[in-house]
Image (cartoon, rainbow, N blue to C red):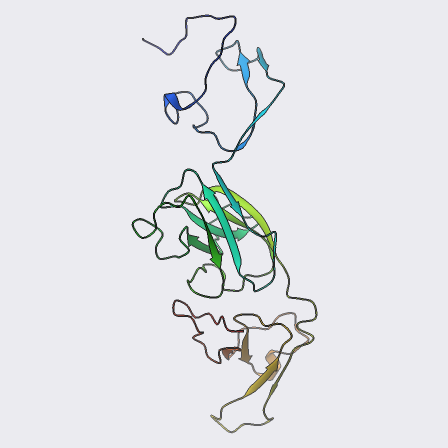
Length: 261
């Protein structure tokens, strides 16, 4: 009654480790229920650290994860990203974020794209979006707007998608690759103006042809000395328009993306 000692002794028996004592009983390093992984049990004869007299089971056991998240291992550049999830301990404040593969969301808040569990950045708490135990979220050029540190389409490279608690602590993450622009796309594309000289304030017409349609592709105007095909990358333009929408507002109501291709 005065302490948590166990004066009883036993040479054999069975103990049941479960949630009877609450989610985080006194002196427990972990919290119940345990997350998915591989475990083993050990018996210690010492009750003061270091626990140097002990025996551990040779066999191990696994616990299924409380949550899963899945995404195609490779995504074509510019294509939608469909993320599926399950969450046995779902909360209305869970959300999904996309990060560079080497970023730790708990340390860095460099979220490239994010969404509530209901697929929006607007309805990510109750009552609009109650806890979701299973479902999917689609990241694309079309509404709803899910961009944050990057705009659509995401840059090529290694990424990861994470199911998050209500802060920047991930529950579970899955890596995937956004593929490069298909080989030969740039070299097979052409762009030209309708004539070589325009009057002051006259509309500049540019005609283009590409082998692969990519959402949010755009056409910009530069001083001739500021951009040419020998450069590794072009700078910010003097003016620009979405190639497929012929405007800067796009064709979506929530954002300025041009999903037309």
